[in-house]
Image (cartoon, rainbow, N blue to C red; front, side):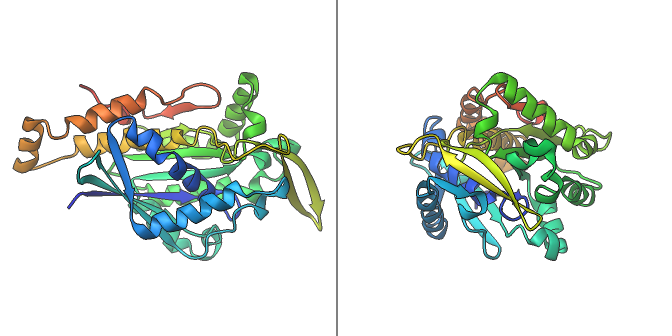
Length: 316
């Protein structure tokens, strides 16, 4: 049986968790194939993500954020076998996706998921963070509650963890380096409580934290906010009428996940059989794949490893 590692998406309803996974799925073959690996979804995962991909590509010219992809209904698991191209999987990656409403209505479930998962992707709605001086950020992204989940789940943490802060709908804010720096500064400011927690004495050497923006559509930019009955409605517009689906940087969360997951897989093997595996070099292809993928991880333009570099790099 291959090793099993679980990954979860965390964020409130409508923030764009499923869009991140869908955009990553669209890049799987390109990202994984170039380093000699293959990522094979089970049939159910493939069917659902293909449907979601079609929905992303069919977004209208002028639309409301919550009118893009419908929210996830119920808890779903997406399973992928990761291994050498043409061979059997060495690792099984299980992505957990659940409705944002669970953060309000199913707290124990969320706490358990964060505890058991090796990596967590936190979806950040970028317009809420950046527009109107961040007026709607607490309402939509709710960073304090996110921090409280980690305080509970990471108490007495023993195993290494990866946390990816993933700004989505960020097209407007990362076209220029100076704007990307402002986005990073705002994330560090508005998630300061979470980052202080990760930087504490007990967690500093156990948690890797990376900011990795994703343009899940690529050609759709924030347009305006309309306040209706005291609630914000965010509107977006394609850059031109003929613009097509063109996601940007959706490979980056996957590359950072690969670095972390492959290092964890190689470094934590135990027992006489796994010593033989290392002696025969059976895992060398995984090490080499991780190194090749890591070479294309971005570190500028809104991307930054905030802590835990040693948890991401595989030494020769």
